[in-house]
Image (tube, rainbow, N blue to C red):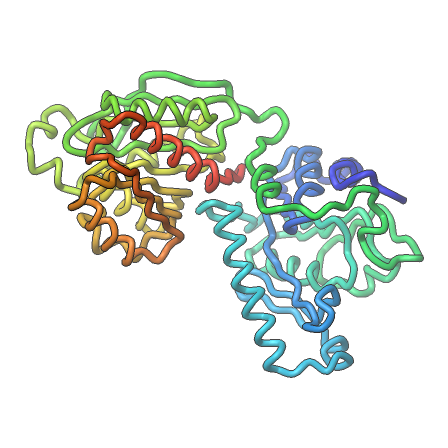
Length: 431
C-alpha cells in the first residue's frame, strides 16, 4: 500500500479507527514532526482534541538514522540493548547523545505548545500516531510516556509498519493498529509518494488549526469581567479561528479605552488574534493613586480576569497571552509567574519589569520586552530585568521612540513586534 502523502494516510487511518473509537473520550497525540499531519487527520475523523507526544530518537553517532533508543517527556528512556551492543556504544557516547536530544525535546515542547500545558490524558483513551514504525524505539518511548501520564487505554496507530512490529511492541500499548505491514519493509518513507521533511512552523500550524466544525463564530462585544468581588468593564474581540486571546494590562491608571493599547489590539485582531481590553481597577479604585503602582493587586486582577476568560465558550482551547504597558507590564509578569498560569507569551511595551523583580525568575512564558530607544531610564531597567529572566526572552529597542511611542511609526513597530511574537508562540491545543 502506498500513500500520496501524510494527510491522506491520516484520513485512511482515521476511518479505520472511527469504527470503534468515535464518540469516546479520546485524545490524539502525534509524534513530531512527521506524525503530526497524520494525527491531525485522525483527530478530525474522531472529533477528538489533538496534541503532541514528544519523544526523540537516540541515533547511533556514526549512523544517526539507526535508533539505539529514545527519550520522552517525564524522564522516559528506552534503550535497544542489541543495537548498543552491536554498535559498540560507550556509555559516554550514549550520555552525550541523550543530553543533546533532551535539550531538543525541551526546545520543541516550548516552541510547539507555546506555554500551554499538555492536553490531559489521565483516564482517557490516548491514540498515539506516527507516520510509520521502523525500529519501534520511538513508538515504545511514546507509549510509555502516555502511560506515565495516566492514560486509561493506549492505542498505537500508524499507516505502515514492518511485519513483525506487533511482536516488537507487544505489551507497550493496549491496541496496535497499522493499515499495512508490507513484507519488503526497509524504511517508512518508501511507502509515501510525498515524504517531505516538515519544519517546526508546519507542526505549529497544524496545532493551531481548529478541528473541523469547531471554529467559533467571530465575537466583538462589551463584557463585564468578574474578578473576585468586583466587575470590570471590558471589550472582548475574538476573530473566527483565532489561535489565542491576548489580555491587556494597562498602566498608569489608564483602562480599556487607552488609545495606544486599542491601536495595538486592532492590529492583533487584523492578524487573527483575539483580545480582551478591560479595566484593571474600578473607577473608585483608579482614583487612589497608590493602586496604580500596586502590582500585586493588578496581577491578582489580571489572573482573575484570565480565569473568567477561560471559563467562556469563546476561549475554549485557545492560548492566552499578556500584553502589558508601563506598570501593567509588571502585573503581567507577576501573573505569568504563577505556577498554574499557563501563559503562552508576554509582551511588555515601555514596561516597568523592575516592579516585578521578585517574580522574574519564575516566569516561564516567552517574554518580549519592547522599549523606546530614547526612553533611557526605562531601557536600563528593562536590560537589568532581562538579565533576571530565565525563560525565552528578547529585548527590542524602537529607535528614537520615547516612553509613550508617540513618534511617527513607533506604535506601528510595537504592533508588528507584538503580532509576530504572539503568533509565533500561540500554538493553541484544543482541550
